[in-house]
Amino acid sequence: MVILDLFSGAGGLSEGFFRVGGTFVGHVEADAHACNTLRTRTAYWTLKNENKLNIYYDYLLKKISREELWDQANVTNSNDVINSFIGDDTFDDITETVRQNLKDKNIKNVDLIIGGPPCQAYSIVGRARMKDSVTCDPRNFLYRYYVRFLETFKPKMFIFENVPGIFSAGNGKHFSDIKIAIENAGYHIEVKELIASDYGVLQDRKRIIIIGWKKNKRKKHYQYPMFETIEKKYLVKDVLEDLPKTKPDRIIEGKGKYRTETNQYLIDSNIRENGFDILTQHETRMHNERDIKIYKEAIHAWDTKKERLCYKELYSRKPELCTHKNKTSFTNRFNVIKSNLPASHTILAHMAMDGHYYIHPDKEQHRSLSVREAARLQSFPDDFYFEGPRTAQFRQIGNAVPPKMAEQIAKKIKEII
Image 1 (cartoon, rainbow, N blue to C red):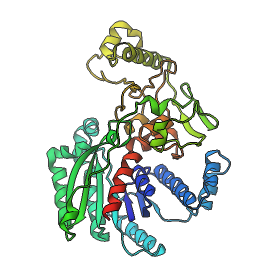
Image 2 (cartoon, helix red, strand yellow; image 1 turned 90 degrees about the vertical axis):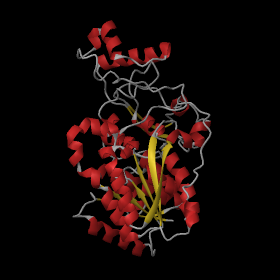
Image 3 (cartoon, rainbow, N blue to C red; image 1 turned 120 degrees about the horizontal axis):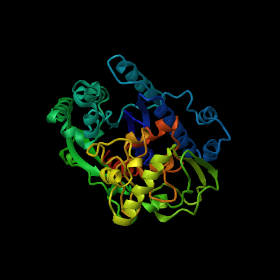
């Protein structure tokens, strides 16, 4: 299965296809930090296939540099990761690089194109934040380049993923235009909304998954795959319980740092395999004293009354903790991760800006989630390393497709192809 990955981000969707043995001839991504993450993960899969993961583990333990890791995995001089914004000025160069990658790997055709344009202009939250400027945001039209890649490489199938808000963006016109453009390119499409919690992810994350086939394929191929769902038998606490307790503005990394042995959920979800004992990026952001006190109030409200902290109520009881008198706006600013439920609320890229919406449920820790905890709620394995500063790491995690969900999609697509 030969794959071209567009708008790759940190590689959540591609991770699922790596797991089923896919061969990539390009990951195209504009963000430099995400590209470095993709290179490091490509190094992981290269070394895993060569039974040389000890080299990768040396990197996690900071025994070798990133450059040494990439060199030993033959990633440094590879063009598999293409750090470029997709636009009129870059399209020809990107396609030429992909063609060269095909030639270098002795491959004739691309079987599958995956990915989804940045969703800020389609998401309901993004539109609310951008207000009138959303109508002229160029990200509304990045789908046109996705279609051009379909026309150029003519894959057997494609997967176009995005947020549920894509249906209502521009009063439905954007989605209508996307469908027309894809059909004009020679593809039949079907669309479904998938929820990550149905696929082994402890998070209520909804994604629109558009799947397309060439129109000249036999009709039986036009059926939308029935992806295998996974029984919901775990709680959010299962994804957090083995990680060491910590405080704001701390980082815990290294061997022998886990608090307990792994558990069945972490094994089933491929987050922490039996015997894996290298913790990385269990890093928390700094909080001021006021926020810490508010976090304690938020955790107490949930633990005692199963209620979310209301800013109006907080203002009436402890006005000294409130920074403004507006009791009608930002009322849902603080939110606790519910450890006793089968799924958390959605992990968003906005967590790179502040942690108020992702408060750790332990009343003793009074902090927001660490990078590793956020990655786990997205089902990223503990051996997945995010490059760049902490803000970039949170953004990569929040923008990603959960790998466990991607893996269930990849298994079925591989069968069809």
